[in-house]
Image 1 (tube, rainbow, N blue to C red):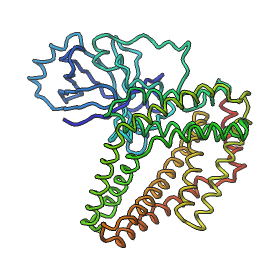
Image 2: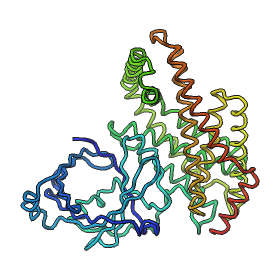
Image 3: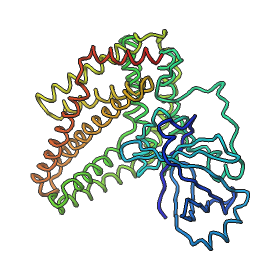
Image 4: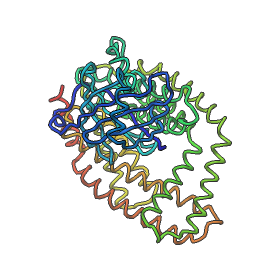
Amino acid sequence: MGSEIERKFLLDSVPGWLEDHPAEALEQGYLTDGRSQAEVRLRRAGERLLMTVKSGSGEVRDELEVMIEPELFARLWPLTEGRRVRKARRRARLGEGLEAEVDTYEGELAGLLVAEVEFTSPEASAGFRPPYWFGPEVTSDPRYANRRLAEAGPPPPPDRSNHRSKAYRLKRKEEVGAGLRRVAAGRAAKIAERLDGVSDADLAAAVHGTRKDIKKIRAVLRLSRGRLGRELFAAENRRYRDAGRLLSGSRDAEVKLQTLAGLEERFGRELPSASAGGWKRLLEDERDAVANSEDGEVRKRIGEVLDAIGEARGRIDDWPLEGDSWKLLGPGLRRSYRQGRAAMAEVSADANAELVHDWRKRCKDLWYHTRLLERAWPSLLGPTVDQLHELADLLGDHHDLSVLAADLGEREQVGSRPALTGLIERRQDELLADALALGERVYTEKPKAFAKRLRAYWDAWR
């Protein structure tokens, strides 16, 4: 039985560009009711007849699916009476190899629209950026589980009278300052949801997601620093930075292992297998030792993070971001674009690891900032956002290799070090060449022209 890592989101409507895509008719019924811990489902999808067994709940579940014969399906189907759903499924590509299954429910569930995205790892799930047309996430809401929908029907519409959206994007009809505060408060609330009472099985993904949420809050601070003032910006940025630093340790060892695995995948037999294997075992031992020694410490740090974020969250509504003006956004966008462009020029002249890492940080700033504005003109801003994401990933992989090279330099027990170092540098050269080529496209405009173009999108949208 394999694991299914999946997140589920509500939709307001099916995007127009997806409506013309072919839809697959699905009909499914459940042999078990809500009292059973295991879920046994029959599904008819065209000519395919399937039986699926799932256990667990939320984002990660165990799953086994098999084809069954028509005769067996016909005998079992009547046992699902009263526990069935019908829906039409369309598939939408999201980039990075991901795909959304967009389900339009029928019958008693008509009007319910849901998008589900499946991931290969908890880290991929935690790093997922929902597109602008996704609505609220309901992964952990049992009312939207298909078996519950089949038995109980659709849940009542959510009460939005006191709802404050956590979406990491600005809305067309909200004041800019209020939107920036809402976005930051939403990430802080998300951190509390991730960490409060997290199980051991979900701990690594929760920590990874929390660190990303902290970076998003700090990006909002950088975008607003001109209005916040030097003193307030420095104090708030320091609080979130220090909270993020509490959550490291075993995660760093895991990144080294993933980077070494990527090196093996890229170079195959060119990588000295005995040396790489021995290095991998050392890293695994260190990761496990850190994880075991830090078990109680991590829980303690999570408590400290929750306290720190809870205290900081109460100050967000006092950030002085009044007004509904481009002046709240324009200077920060222009600055992050200018800094990224200058960092790229420095890397072009001197590609040392520290400068490459600095460029990555400036690229991430601009990525987060443009994500906030993406809905202003998705067809034009969306590709820019995606390019910035790809560029940040290339530079991030380069940095991870620098960390791996530093680790190798400290290990006397790993043989073939010159060969391993040579392959690391070779891969870094490849990544940097790709990054510089992509950076030339991302940073082709002058900062003033870039800010002017985004303001035109913003003004047209507002």
